[in-house]
Amino acid sequence: MIHSGSTASRFLLYVRSMLSWLTCALLGFAPLAAQAQTSSLSGPLVLYTSQPERDVKETLAAFNKRYPNVKVEVFRSGTTEVINRLRTEIVAGAPRPDVLLIADSVSMEALKGDGRLMRMRNLDTTGIPAAFFDPQRTYVGTKLITTGIVYNSKSSFKPASWADLLNPALKGHIVMPSPLYSGAAAITVSTWSKAPELGWKFIEGLKANNAVAVQGNGAVLQQVASGEKSVGILVDFMALNAKAKGSPVEFVIPREGLTFVTEPVAILNTAKNVASAEAFVNFLVSREGQEFSTTLGYLPLASNVPPPKGYPAGKSFRFMKIDADDILKTAEDDKKRFSTIFGG
Image (tube, rainbow, N blue to C red):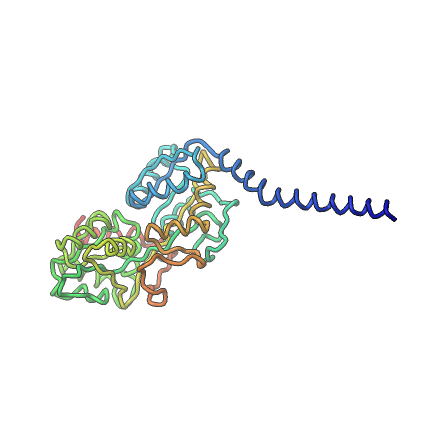
């Protein structure tokens, strides 16, 4: 009996030691394995993006904390210029980027239709609503960027709707980003043009009210914040970040609704560093990446990540109807028509 008890005791000790070993493996060795995988990623990664310069630098710094051996080369400009450069390279048979991070899904749909985007089989979309990524997983949204109205808080006129921008009191005091440069602005113009309550009559009315179109959203913010213009059409995060830092600007959700883009990211099917490209995409859509985006003032797409401080309550957001497929059909014609109206 004593011998049998000793055997049982030794067996129990063995089981406990095995359980202890397995616990260590799960809690200790798994992170080490993940660390080894992280450190194994290396080499050059070429990114073409329309993100603001500060945001690109901070995003890459956050990415490189996890993947220090991936050296990212960046070309940054407005979405239209980024796409034009990429298409020129495609025609020449030498597309350079591994990863494309631009303003809108319409541009991605065009590239997808041309067979230029890789299907991301290792994409982890946990937490990202299906509405924000391509069903074939050739691109995925990374954040929600809305476009509304910004005005200088010292202005006597405080618009509450898109239609208010046609008020004669604002003649010569309106600035907007050009859709010939900004992808978000291109979506806004196309959305206006298809809205029954606005249409091309509204866009022509903006020009008649002496609105000016500048190269990008940054120039809009600068002119409104300085008081050079009273009112602007601007992406939310620029206005809200500026206000938080003390700039005299207010952001308005128009009665007709906001326009929006999701700043999608994709990997080209000609990518040379696919492993690092996949790691970059997965970082952006991970909980860590979504939480990081809020530090830059962006609305996360992940439903379990809270928005940045100071943002309007979620229930106050109103959106205009946006049909990416419909906009894709008319996007180039819309830009040409806008250029004819605004002269350039």
